[in-house]
Length: 460
Image (cartoon, rainbow, N blue to C red; front, side, top):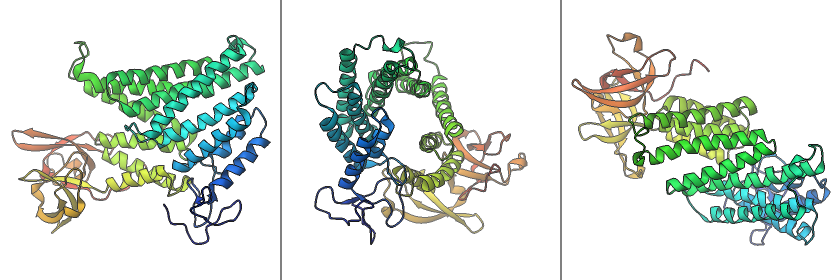
């Protein structure tokens, strides 16, 4: 539990933290910052949200749901356990107030809206690739929501509502029911299925849900959401190919270029998603910050260290300013930035991995720490000073070329090691350069030095 700053008080009732009594502990898990801003009792947040719900227009679902999942101060979504607790309280409130037998069609939507908020809070809290309790509960609530959608369609005999005039209440209700709840549910089922991938069938199930969601979004004219599902379908189809390619039976697909083709498709898809969010929503959008994080991770995995580091450095600053230093997305950026501090090298002749720290004696000595183990145990590592010619910058390590005679134009150029190749003349490093128009080159290890600090980009 985080230590509360002195003077912290609930901004609703001005009361202090009362700890053990349920609902009266001070909480703040949004983007509020500072020593005292944004703290509130859970009970006070619930009371405020209930009051806002009762005052909202009966068909204004955004006003009805917002106080349950967005902070009244910073206007950013709640996170982690606070988001789940508020969503649970939202369900209790709507079921007690609007969930009575024979309730109106708009009351039905209010109960569904609470289920939707709970699904989002659980889904965002579930760890990737882990079938945990949050994921299991989310799937149960999704199935409950889909069941409510089906019963509502049947009770209201809505089969022809999609063909009603677009300004009619029937058409608007149908689009809300099917788009905001039915299509949303299938999209979430697709997303959650990806968290427990174990076979090709899991990918197929996930893609099936995304296609169902896309079809519904297109039917009700929700083009942006349909495009998101299209992106998901394209991405997961690419990952499915990568996941199963070694077992493919189709000889037409089973060629040596398949891996690079699949990787290129995945890479381009994530790049397009980030650039689309950047262009449409701006750099301060949560969608841009999130897609940029995923794109940077992919860049890092593909040894595009320099581009990834520059992107992470820029977006980490944006996330810290917009979402706050305690936001989980900001913390992900901070962790990624910390990982970029490691300059990994191989030390000969033992061929063990170390972290390069600095050069001494005008570059003749490289100070290293290690050897690096997986998982890494930093406390057990030692510092060594080795001859620089005995170190090989590992894949992904940024380097600067020097001492080249036949390719002197590369001296001083910043690049990164993407591959290591053995030749008749010894090991060569495939260095890809940051400067546009400069082609990659195979360079002797003695003609590169680790770049511990990146110079400013020409685009900055």
